[in-house]
Image (cartoon, rainbow, N blue to C red; front, side):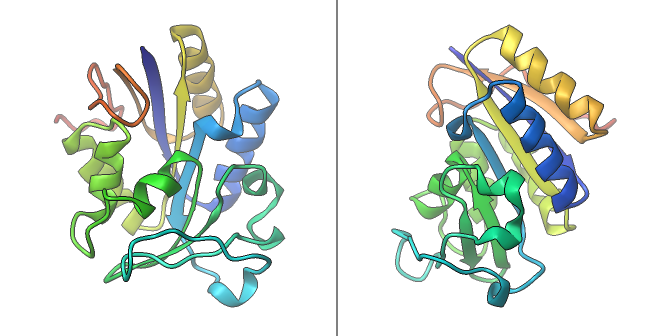
Length: 187
């Protein structure tokens, strides 16, 4: 069984600081995801292009050092153009979820990807709103409760909002359960 921990932060710098601390705490780059709007435009992003996104759903490339060293460490970092939503920076398992069948176009694309990663639907909709408002979403998939608690402590230390946890049978295949989104909102 895996556990996942999710949070939002107001900007890329906070996301990078969290990613750096997660790395220092021993979390794998393949277990960390980040999703945020690309506010700088694709001119600043360079190097090589990699995408296997469905036709018309996403386009992307590897984000150059302009994304910062913290995010540059993550697996599969790139830019995505989601129809009707605009450009996004994504890294980790969420990049695969957005580039795969979970994204079907302008409506429900991010929500579908988040649900596919195990985030319950109501929380996925909340995170989608937060991302559209300009926040970054950071997620960590862990193997046990000790790792989950360490990730949660890192999020809290950085003043992250919307911290939630979920558990499931397998990474990216089960819907989360036991979630406790700390937003003051009741789902």
